[in-house]
Length: 365
Ligand SMILES: CC(C)(COP(=O)(O)OP(=O)(O)OC[C@H]1O[C@@H](n2cnc3c(N)ncnc32)[C@H](O)[C@@H]1OP(=O)(O)O)[C@@H](O)C(=O)NCCC(=O)NCCS
Image (cartoon, rainbow, N blue to C red):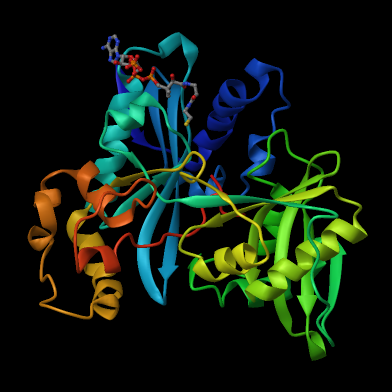
């Protein structure tokens, strides 16, 4: 009989074996899951890793990393879900589905409102998960893009995680972000969670004003020769654009690829006014599931309250339009989906969709 339960510290080794097999070695890649996810698949996070066990053998796994989002200063409790797998010998027997239900139930009971998943499998779509968000992909090319210099601002481009203090200082000022400790920065920079197979190190370009005051950063890697992919940016948007120009020239890159969430209207409009147009799409591979509507409503209410400027504020989920409250997928679409969003009329269209942190940066799972 297959049992479903949270992992124990002593299970982590077996979980790593399973996830390395499914996601890495079975397709000829190095077993890098432990190295790439040091704060996720680890002994400290064992209670948030869920397993299906058959006679002592771990045959399926769903990992959770609790990540609080901070949206315009308001906390939103989120869980990021990843390394979802069933050993091939056990696939197609409903084990993945049962484990998924168990995880959603357990997180909902804990009062976590949202689960974010870096995948788009049918398994999720059949279980009320929806793709959310909208991003613009910009490609900035050497020779076709340049930027005026800022007097007095210096920059530093490096593969060493030695500027973690400054990166932390810049990131914590972001209006939409994850709560991320100072200690996590160097660990995540070294882990390269969002790139597989992992590159040896991520590159960070950091701009400073006087007295080492961090202004902006770009973190990324050379995806193919001459093409630099930004995985995370933060800070003053004009300086973000200026740093791209520096990267193109100092690192002899032909192009820099930058994904900008649509809610970052400042950066999108700076790039547009430089004659650059991004290609609009869903956030690549990000899926969302609401697991506790009431907890979520309580946490997002202050964001709605601030943005509301006419008529009576909705006092409960039941007052949202089209009875979206009755269906977890419709509710997630109404609250968070930007791409191809239908109009719900005013005042809804001026308040929603609400932004959520960029999922493909250092907190990627
Ligand atoms: C995705 C994955 C986790 C699903 O795990 P699983 O245990 O096979 O999941 P389930 O058995 O619950 O569902 C899989 C299929 O079996 C079917 N199924 C479910 N219960 C069944 C049962 N009792 N008998 C027969 N088939 C069943 C489901 O309908 C589903 O079919 P579909 O996907 O064609 O609609 C697994 O295929 C896997 O590890 N894939 C590789 C890793 C991966 O891609 N992970 C996702 C990363 S985002």
